Image (cartoon, rainbow, N blue to C red; front, top):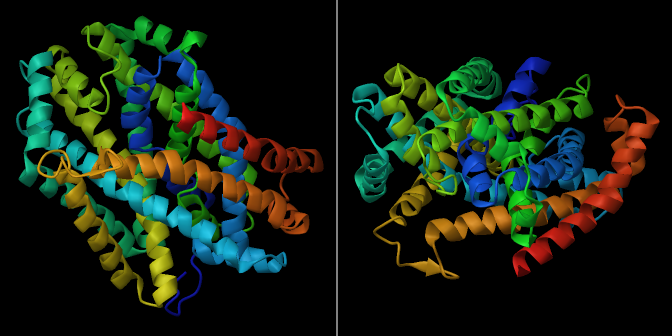
Length: 451
């Protein structure tokens, strides 16, 4: 893969690729973000819109990203340039790939802070547990975390150091080795916690909340939130899937891989709801708590459940695994471009990228208190980055990728990459990516932002 002179790297097996792709898609977007966004947007009504967006919009775009990555054999900007030239199109399409890298870099800045919270809570779970923690104490504990600049910065940098080590080690020795261990572990932990909640209380209320829709809750803001959550969750328009696609051997089916990734991602998001919301309802807490939902609710549940000490450790290990594997995908896309663009070895590009993210993540952490009054468009530094990445870059980037794959890439090239589906399946994808996905994204984006 190295643009500094090495050969293009490839996944050693389909399992490794799937674990890396699922690891990138399945992260805090599912376990941290999905529950609180669902809570803020009315529960089951939001889930239905989310599912429609994930499969009706996310799957076609994700297929497009992977086929462009594999066809272009380069970082997202270079891959798009290569495919554009092959189809006799302008190399300016490379800017769409650059937009994906900007989204990944911006998201990583905010994401690293949240992963830092998770690691800090894992440390708390191991050292002190959450004995006698009630709702008021849990809220005060999380507020104390946000006010402790040294602690937030330290744990943010720990998370970035772990991510940097994996990236530094390379595709096979770093990314593959990490995800093939971490992802099965995460799935087992998540299933175990959901199974416990089935008998612990609050499970029926959670199922009702997640799967009994109130359509009056659906409005422009809900739809935009669902699109941004679907894109954030499955990794659309962040450059990660295009980068992982560039390492994908032609013997592996893009269509099957994408469906597995999106089904696994959706399964984990819903399962995370069945881990978190039972505790919310069982202890009379607010499902619309916001970004601190799991940090406000889960410590209360752990304090009261039998074996809560062990379960708290397992939960935050699972959450840490999800966060780190997603950070790896976000950083890898940017790292690949730096390595390719400046023709430097991976270990140097990894240090450069992680270092730049670390500097800006410190600002993101400080925006919760010290520089909270510094605003961009009425939002603090952290919220401005989150809004710009998830509400602007992801839907606009997804729109442009769909237009590129549907209208700029030749049918011969796209069909050659999607040989494992029959002619009817290909025509359905081609119709969706040309005539359904772009107009839907335009309407959703314009109406959602206006609303």
